[in-house]
Image (cartoon, rainbow, N blue to C red; front, side, top):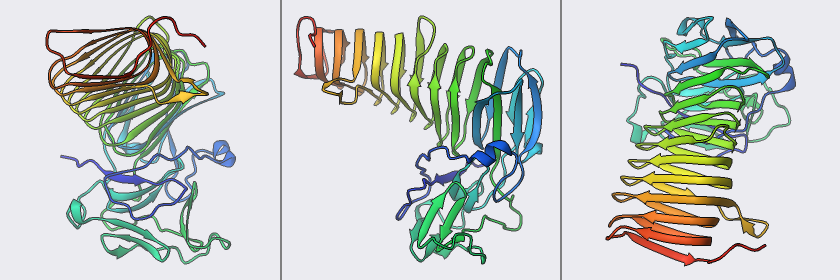
Length: 394
């Protein structure tokens, strides 16, 4: 059975002492010259063309095991798939893109042509137990499990002092950290890039199970169905098509702008999944969190909301105020809380809020609420800090 990898995705802001099995999101940094020649990796393997898929394909079906994934749109007349290990993929002209094998990588540093710096435990067992495998980044070097990592002899950045990191790699006093080259291991992690036409109108069906970074610039074509699991964070700039979202098994999905088409959008977060919508605008959302999952809707405007929380999961609506006004506006809203779940409605404007809760659940309500009611003979702990009756007035 193939072991999933655990990597740190490091931002260019630097870091202190870090532990494995976690990674922090990095802004997508792709230089203009790399856009002109996207097949060349700055450090490792070239990205080889795998397939050309016609523009009129009804849908793109992507099944990913564990890879550094990037989907971007550009001015072009077809869909192109590129990867650093062509033998690890199966592609069809019908729109199927499936990863069949994961690169065998030992603990260390890997830089990818998608502009990511990865430092972590790799895809094969570490020489030390997980709890002992710490990563320390200091001014004098980077240590993994107590062993100092090598740097290139060549001075790549003469003006750099101490630890530095950008889209070209990681540097110590101007010397680039060496990518791993251990006997019996692959040269780098799997990296794949999918280039779509800006006007592509087909659907997207994507399954993601990895712990490496995944990015998509936007989706405005046909229906978008995502199943996100694993330990990695899947980052999407914008979705403005019909969408169904499921986050499962520790997966993390973040969408910066969510404006789904259609009458009803369905989102689910299960087990340890985390789903975050930074800004959302839609007519209706049905959402569900179970296990120890979490759903965050931070800002925006939603017409009708129905939400169910079960297990020890959490639903968080709102994230403070924007220019003195509530950041999230909700119309008719229903919250159903079961088991030991929690809900927070923070600084929201709500026209109608109904909560059905059971003993053991908790709800924290703080906002401008026109109508508020609870249901059930036995309710959980409901705390209303600020409630306003009647129409909201600016």
